[in-house]
Image 1 (cartoon, rainbow, N blue to C red):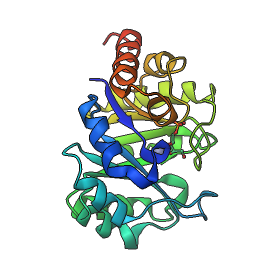
Image 2: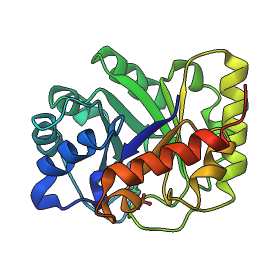
Image 3: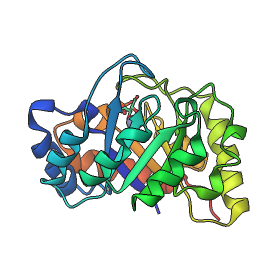
Image 4: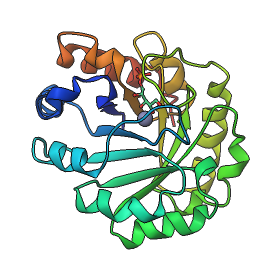
Length: 223
Ligand code: DX5
Ligand code: ZN
C-alpha cells in the first residue's frame, strides 16, 4: 500500500506541532523527521527533544531519518522520544548490523538508507533484518533538491531483492519527490514516499497528499 511521509524539514521549525497535526489532518501516513549532524551531511537540524515535541501533536507513526555518523549512542533517546522507526545510513555505520540490532532491541522498527552513489549490493546482507529500505534520490542534507533519475535503477534493484526475499519490507524513496517525479519512483517499486517541499510549499496539504498518492498508486507495477 502506498504511504506518504511528509518531511518536516520543509516545515516552519517555529511551528512543528501545528505542522505535524496538519499533516495528520491532511491524510499523511507517517511523519518523516530528518536528523542531521553537520558531519555526515553538511547541515544541522533536530534532536530527540524535537521528536518528543512532535509526538505530543500527532498520533501518526514518527520515522526518524538519522543522517548522523555513528548513531548508536543516541538511538535510545529517539525511541524514548516516541519514534516508531529509526533509519540509519549504511555509509555512517561502521557496524551496521549492530546498529540495526540495537534499534530492534529498543523495540523500534529499523530502516537502512543508501546515498545516490552507494551500490545497492551494500544492502544485501542487512536487508533480511529490516522493516524499511531507503533509497536516497538526492544527496542528503537539504530539502528542495532535484530528483536524481539514476536512482530509479536502484529502486528497481532493491524492489527485486525485496520481492525475492518474500519479506514485508517497505521501500522508501526520499528526495525530490513531487507531482512530476512520484510516478517514476512508484513504477520503480517504491511504496513509501517522503515529500518535504512538495507538501509544505503548498497551502492545501490535503490536496497535495491526495494527488501524490493517486499518482503513485496509478504508476505502481501490478504484482
Ligand atoms: C534530505 C532529506 C529529505 C528532505 C526531502 O536530506 O532526507 O527528507 O526533507 O525534501 P524534498 O522533498 O524537498 O526533496
Ligand atoms: Zn529524509
